[in-house]
Image 1 (cartoon, one colour):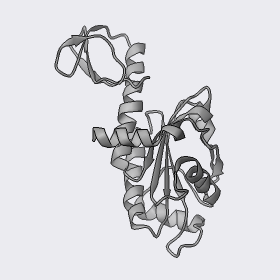
Image 2 (cartoon, rainbow, N blue to C red; image 1 turned 135 degrees about the vertical axis):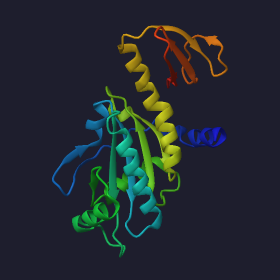
Image 3 (cartoon, one colour; image 1 turned 180 degrees about the vertical axis):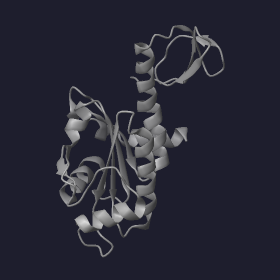
Image 4 (cartoon, one colour; image 1 turned 120 degrees about the horizontal axis):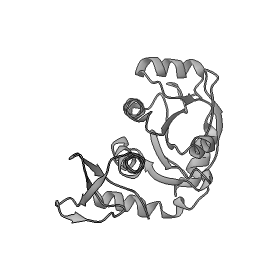
Length: 220
């Protein structure tokens, strides 16, 4: 797993420095969202590009819904981008409604997303093409949304979940700890040895009340 993640990040080195494409889209229910607006709120953004005819998209949409249910209170925003219907035509609102009912989705989804799909393909693929479902994860830069970090681009929701947990949710836990009244009495490494705070390193915080918490703070 470590080697695959290292290879993944090396392959995205150039993409990480690119300006994140912005978009403003409206769901079939009439709710408008913007990529930069969500990132400026300090929210990690997960994007799922899928097509109804694609068998892999069915598993992908179910995994995306599970992620949304588990992280909606953790400054994470999930969006679905529905490309084509079962007949390979551009999806419409009837298709989106059917997709939502069949698979119980509750996260915001959009249709007519050809230009957005192409913009992200052009920015984040070397071949100028991708297979669906395609998952993207962005870690926010609230002050400069366009400079937010692409943390994952691929087709494996399990890997995306792993990266999201290590790079975003654990960092948020650190911020919660800093703002709490708990007193840290010592920090341990994964071997139980006392150590100092280190970014990108699994740590165990021991509090004065006897409780402990596993921490992984993402940093440079």
